[in-house]
Every structure is written in C-alpha cells, then in structure tokens.
Image 1 (spheres, rainbow, N blue to C red):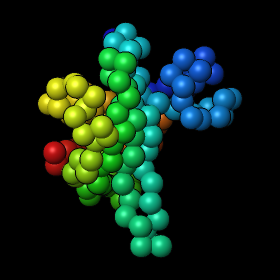
Image 2: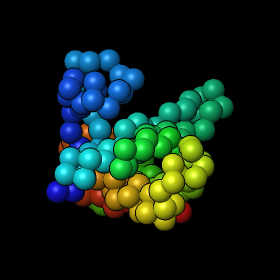
Image 3: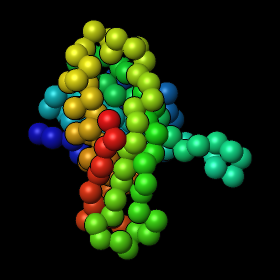
Image 4: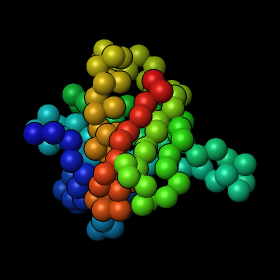
Amino acid sequence: MAFVNERVSDEDIDAYELSIEKGKGHWWTRDKERNYYLWGGERGNPARGQEMHGYFYLFISGIRLRLAISLGQWSKNWHVKPYVVAWDQLLWIDPPDCGGLDRTTVINLLKEALVVYGRNGRENLNTPDRITNFGF
C-alpha cells in the first residue's frame, strides 16, 4: 500500500494520541500498511507579516517527528494544468537527530507523503492534475 489522503478516525486519534478533536472530519496522509502518517498543513498570515510555512507531524516506525517547510511558488489558479505545488526548504526537524532514523530516509518518506498530500491533504478534487516540486 502507499500513502493516501483519508479522514482520521476517532480510533486513530486515540491510538496515535493526536491532539485533534474527535468527530471533526480531519484529514491526514497515511500509509496504513507501513504504519506511517503525515498530518498538518500550511499556517501563517501574510497580511500580518507572517510567512506561510508547512508545519507537519511525520510518524515513522513509532517515532513522531515535527517539521517545518517553507513554501515555494505554487500555482495561483486551481484551473492551471498541471497545478504546481512547491516546497522550498526544510526549515527544521524535531528532534534534530530524526529520533535515530536515517535523515535521508526521513526526507524521502516526507517527499513521498507530500506528493500525495498535494494541495491540501484532502481529496484534491480541484487539482487532480498536479506536480510537486522540492527545493530540498
């Protein structure tokens, strides 16, 4: 199995001790077979001088990593084909030693998950034809 975007079940919220409210229809990008997930999204407020960044949890082999990624140049219009999603720089990973995991493996799994995450980690109905670029 590979990563897919799906709704987080209440059972998974409990099992992974996620800090999200049950029954709210939150989404994540998950590889159920390998027991990996990516959860989070973009945050920031350019109107208030805050840059937009992607803030995520990446769960691999029982280790939950927190990370931040700067956004690159995304398509400005959903109707552009292909729609471009661009992640510029990996700003930080916590813990810095990747919890003992190989950093290259972590980055490769992160990229694999972000390609599926797409524009917003949901169904991506508005941007089914898209490419994902990485600057890291």
